[in-house]
Image 1 (cartoon, rainbow over the protein chains, first blue to last red):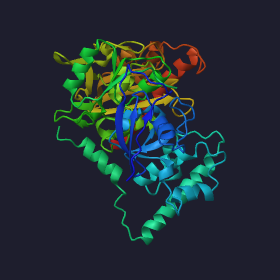
Image 2: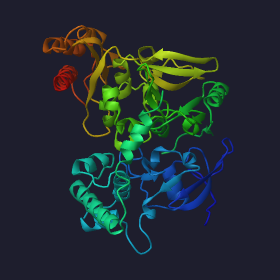
Image 3: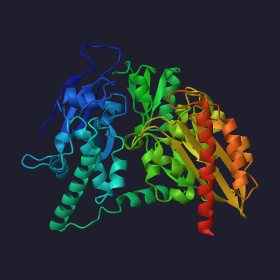
Image 4: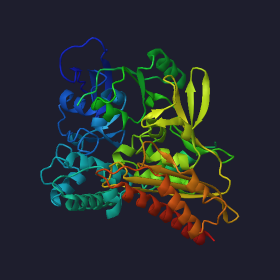
Length: 201
Length: 291
C-alpha cells in the first residue's frame, strides 16, 4: 500500500489566507493522500497531483464529460467537484480499468469496434459506459445512447462508441456465464429506488 | 479555471451548518450537488468566502410520502435518485417526467432538486415543476424551521428570500386532492443545454374532473412563471380538449419570452401552448387507459 503525500495547489505559490486540507482517498484501489487547497478541483488533483493524466479536462465548463470518473461507483464530472469532496471516498479513473496483462472488456470493445478517433473523450466515455454496465448488464442501444448523452465526442464517432459498449456488454455477459456467476446485479437499480421511495414516512 | 480562494467547512449536522452560515456573515454558500455553484465559481460569477459542504450530513437523501400523501424530498436527494425511482411515476408523475431531462446523466448523479430550486435559475426545470405542484421548501435557520412556498421563495433571477443563515433542508409537496396526473416537457437544442422552453402541468383528478391544477413555465421569463390563470382554466373541467386549449392559450399569454439565439419570442410562446396541449393529451390518454 503506497501513499502519495504532497501539497497540490492550483497555481503554485503559497497563500496563507486559506488553510490547506489533508484529503485521503482511494484511487484505483490504492490509498492516496494529499494536502490541497479547497478550491482545487478533483480533476486537477488526479492529473497534476497524482499524475493520472488519463482523466482529461475538455470544456472545463461541465458540458463535455471528458473528465468523467467514477466516484464511489457513480459517474461524475471531476471538473465539477472539489478535491476536498473526495476525502474518504473511492475514485476510479481510466488507469484503473485494465490489469497489467489485460484490457478491460470495455477497452477491448472500443479497440475492436473502432470506438475512438482522436481518443480525447474516450476515458470519460468508457467510465460512463462502465457505470451503465455495472447497473444494467444488458442495455438496449437506446439505453446506451441515453447513458452516454453527457459525454461529447467531437469526432462524432458515436455510432462506433455505441457498438463498442454493446460489444463489451456481450463480452462481460459471456465472461459472467463462463464464471458461473449469477445475475444478482440485475435489479439493483429497481431495488435501490424502491428502498429509497419506500420509507415508512 | 479555478474559483477564487475560499474556506471549506464540512459540517455533520444541519445545526452545525446553520451556525457556520451565521458566523460567516453572508459570505458563505452551501454546497450540495454543486453542479450550478461550482461552474459559477469557476467563471468567477460567484466568489463566496466560505463553502459549507452539506454532503456529509446524514439523512437528507430521501424522497418519500407521508401517510397523508404529503411528499418530501431531502436536500441531498439527487436528480438521478428521482430518475431511477420506480415508485415515482405513480406518486409524482410530473417529477418523474422531469427528472430524466434535467441537464445530462453525469450532472444528474450529483445535482439536487432542492439545490436547483434554491439556485432560482429562470431556466431551471425543478422550480416550474414545484410551482405546478404548489410545492414549498422547508428552511432551517438559527430560530428553527419555516416553510416557504416556491412561488414566494423565488424573488427574481438567481434570487430567493432565504436568509444568509438559512438552509433549505427539504422540498414539500402537499397531499393531492385526487389522483395525480401530470407531465413535464422541455425543448432543448441538445442534451445538457438550458431549456428553450419547459412546461410543467400537474392536475389532481377527482370524480372525473380536475380538483386542482398547476402550470409552471421554464425559460420564458425573468424567473419561473406560475401560469395560474391557465391552471384555473383547467380546474373543475373534465380536462376535455376545449379546456386544455383554453389553458394552452392562457399559458402562452402568461409567458414573457425574449427573442434570442434559442428562438423568437413568438416561437417560444407557440411552444408553450403546444406543450400544454401535448401534456393534456398525454393525461387524457392515460386516463382512458386506466378506465
